[in-house]
Image (cartoon, rainbow, N blue to C red; front, side, top):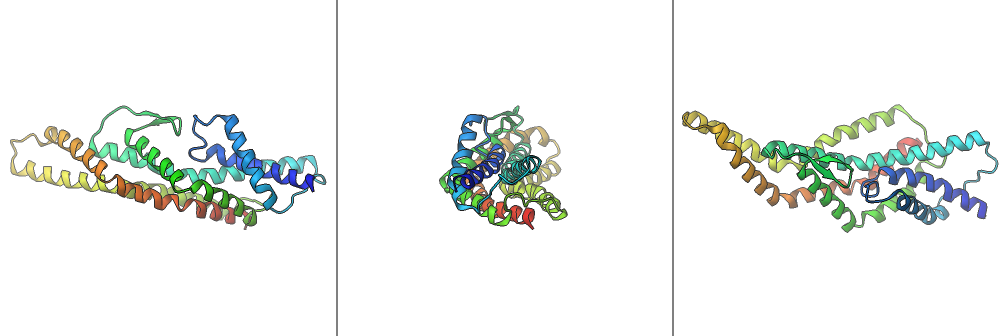
Length: 254
């Protein structure tokens, strides 16, 4: 019994470690590798008794190595799918910066250890706070547990459906980014239309140079006023994360 429990713990530890290495928040540089390993061990300790028993003593060394690599890859794929929302937030931040003409140099994003625009950093912080406030980390545990009923240990395999699904999720990135940045896009369209009309009515006015200050000021005001709407969009996408985990697990195990 102890041997089976240790086998379960080890297999869950590998999958959870792969998931946490790419999952937003936990993959941030502020979360040290030692802390990430400890979190994976804790998740494995919580989930190991609740999954079907896995006995590895009768496996060959090569089979064990293949299954261990397979579990790590499954965790990495699950973490990558969950991370796509934060990729969408970075795209939305870039769109917002370009539309309001905020030509500031990219700043360091401590959540992703990469260069990002200031609106993208703010949206990443907002998504992180909402994710923790909504107790989505508890739903992550539930979704992680249910993946073992859809793709048991050693039963995952690649398929054409998996590739198509991942490509569909990549396409969803741009749709989600457009939905989040929609208020600023609408303002940019209205301002462009207004200044185009002014340029035709008053040809003596230098509309191009005079529109920069108004565009930046109006864009920042709309961005601040629409942050609640953007938060609602982010919440809707955050609530999809457990379903995305189960969907990718179902494809892997089918």
